[in-house]
Structures are given as structure tokens and as C-alpha cells.
Length: 128
Image 1 (cartoon, rainbow, N blue to C red):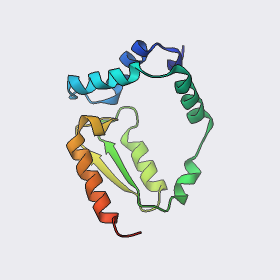
Image 2 (tube, one colour):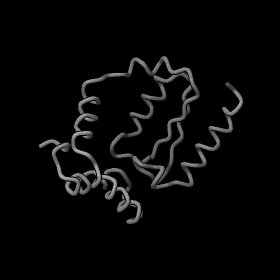
Image 3 (cartoon, rainbow, N blue to C red):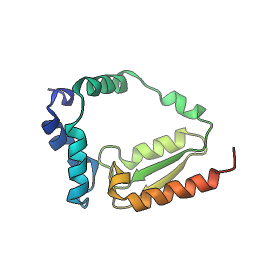
Image 4 (cartoon, helix red, strand yellow):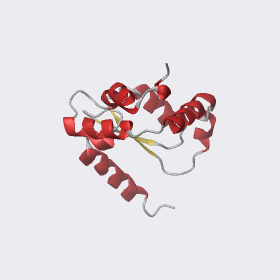
């Protein structure tokens, strides 16, 4: 059975722990569990099918906008190798790593995440 046919509770118990490092607070994991429990199975299937059927990697080199990739160093779903591939493919992309954070670094390390976003926005604020 694919994950898109799981109940919200089953999906939450399978996916939520993969989104964070082992050091994530119970409150953060519980919040993600609630998000996964509310997923819509048909929408999930459409998203999964689209991701499987569509390869847009060639479009990355055409990005002509300031780009910041923010990555949790402990991301189990998309390891740092993926971050580096995106950085290499997107012209002039910046990569910010957040130590001690996983896939959903904005939830697990919001202060560090927000700092990277603020710095990036400040650095490109008047350039376009």
C-alpha cells in the first residue's frame, strides 16, 4: 500500500518523525502529527503523482531571481546531497545550513531559519 492510501493517523505516525531530528521537541512533532492527520488523500495522491511524473530539473538553470535554499543539516527526507545539487543547478543560489534541524527546519529551528531569511531579504532588498 502506498502512503497515499494510509489514514491520517497512519500517515502521521509514519511521516512526522522523518521530518525532524531526534532532538526535536515533542510539541513540534505533535504539531506536525496534527498537520498530517488533516491531509486530504486525493490531494496527496495528486501531489505524489505529479512529483513522480514531472521532472523539472532542467528549469532550475533558468531561475533568474535571488534564491536562498535553507536546509536542515539533519534532513533525513532530502539529504545535503540534494541541497548541493539544487545549489549547483540554480545560478547564484545561496545555501544556508541549519545545524540540529531536519526537513522542516522552520518548525524545528525557527530562530535560525528566520535569521537566514532576514539576512537574505536584506541582502537582496534593493537589488531588483
